[in-house]
Structure formats: C-alpha cells, structure tokens
Image (cartoon, rainbow, N blue to C red; front, side, top):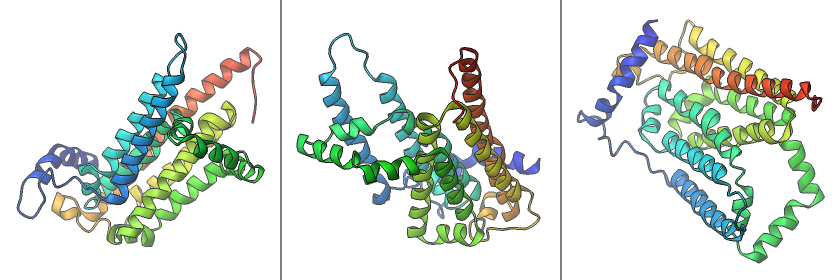
Length: 293
C-alpha cells in the first residue's frame, strides 16, 4: 500500500521534478532525441504518409477509405514516441517504475495499435514501381513465405515474445541495459519486434480461440514475472533502482511498484483482449462459424 501511495506522489510531482533543480534537466531537455530512435520513427511516418497518399489516390469514389487503419497507425506511432522520446524515457533511466511504464506502452499499447493498422501495403506503395515489384517477388518467394508463416505463427510468436520479456528481466541484463546505451537500444528493439509479431499472430493469423489462449498464457507469465519482482524481499536490480532515493523511494519500493505495474495493469490489457476474443469466438460458434486453431 505504501508503494502504491508513493507511486501517486511520483506522478503528481514528476513534472516539477524534471523542470526544477540545478541537478536535473529542464522539462524541454528531458525529451530525448536519440537519432537511433527519432530517425526510424520519422522514416516510418513519412513512408506511411507517402504510401497512404498513393493508395488513396487510386481508391475510386464510393469505396470506403481506410480511415481507421490510418488513425490506428498514428495512434500507435504517437504512443511509441511518448514512450521512447518524451520525458517518460528520461524518467525511466532514473526510476525502474517509469522504465516499466515505458516498456508496457511499447508492448501492450503501441504494438497492437500498429498491427491493427496493417501498414505493410502502405509501406510497399511508398516505393517506386520497380521497387514494389521487387518487394512483391521477394515476399512471395516460397522460402520467405515459409519462414514468415513459421515466425508469425501463434506458438512461435508467443514463445519469442516470452523469451524477450524474461531474458531482459534477468537482473544482469536489465542492469546492463541501464548502463550501456547499445544494450538499451537492443532491449527496446527486441521488445517492439517481438510484440509486433505477437500481436500480428493474435489479431491476423490465429483463430479466436487459439488467440485467446496465447493471450492468456502471456498474461500468466508476465503476471508471474511482475509478482516475482513485487514480492521479492530483496533488491534484484541494483543499477536500475540506484536513483530511487532521489525520488523519495527506497530501491526495493521502486522495484515493487515496477513489478506491480507489470503484474496488474499490463495483465489487464492481455486479459481484456483475451475476453474480447473469447466472446467473439463464442458468438461465432453459436452461428456454426468456428475454428479451433
């Protein structure tokens, strides 16, 4: 309970904390403009806009426009920018609590929004005609199709996402990601890529019953990991929680709050998605339109 109350205090004072005090940056400088993050996000946005413009110019009058896909893409890109560029990222370098918030935004909010937009067609159309033909031949090759079908399968995608989550929460690796910039970038990239694969398998590749099962499995193992962190009697992540005292927390409290964030709010996202898919599966079964896998 004390940890939860402290979390509320941190959120209430985070803006003042980054804006005042000679030892801390101002609110504007707390935005982190890492070129390895900003450039890919910018390129992704530009290519999507170019490809969408070309596609929309070819849509005949009266045909529906993919407005929901466009909104979903930019909502996903915006939340990804908030996680990786805004002061949340800077706070995540000082508090495990905000580092966990950053990770959960990337994996449980940005990734499904981007997947819902199905941006592949827009990206392909952003290239010149000769490049589009080359890309089409490449992705229609039997070897590439076979590898993609395996990689984006429900079991494989769920397993890869689980490995990424658990591996990066090994204390030695998580602390290394805080002290080494290259490791930090690789960590975020692996979280994003495996989350995109996972949600693609859930939303577009798996039958509703199987997708709900994969979501349930993910909810269970992430909740278990969060509970291990929240209930641990000792500090597991020394480097990650080293700055907690500057924010009125002990290192153990910082770790406990981070664990609870993974345990409860993130678990709720997976549980909610699983319940939605199960309800859809049940409705389809009532009409006789049902697939188990």
